[in-house]
Image (cartoon, rainbow, N blue to C red; front, top):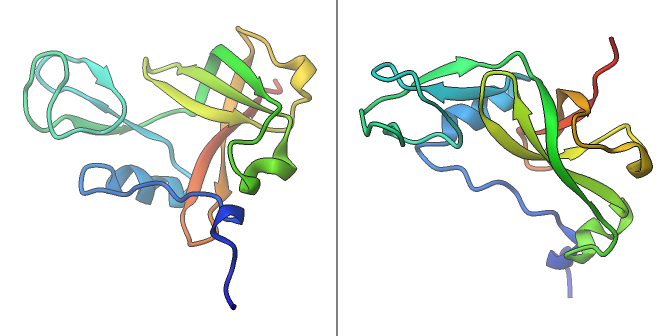
Length: 141
């Protein structure tokens, strides 16, 4: 038998027509979100319409990449073999300064130091098949 054990490979993000601009921006080290031109509503993930007023064609904007941890959990038991070497790791729900929320891993921070209210900055980890995945690390000012 040849090949790689599928359980040892981390899953790649699902790229759709609606999310491709987001993933292309991530590959270039840029975090993006959408804002409705009609009502100003901020949203994530990308969609072809505003989730508040249903207007079509929200505008993609560039984020500063700065945010605050809203909530988090420490993962001690890997969901698959691919994540076993990463445990324990912190999975955080981050409120970015522009008003959208994203679930990401907290990097460069001992799990004991993770806390609600921690200021963070986005970073991008390369993906095996190309592209990059947004993550965060504590903001050092």
